[in-house]
Length: 59
Image (cartoon, rainbow, N blue to C red; front, side, top):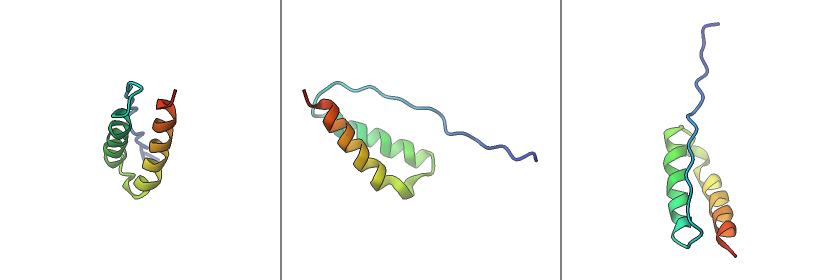
């Protein structure tokens, strides 16, 4: 019963509403999920990040 479940550290980053923020957001998420050991789902997560960041950038 001494097993400790370690939670990944919370990370956040803010970006301006501009075109170059989309690849920057993807890179941030790519590095974060790799650090958390979740690389197996990277393609799915990065697709979602791309869509969200692109839609957030639109006026």
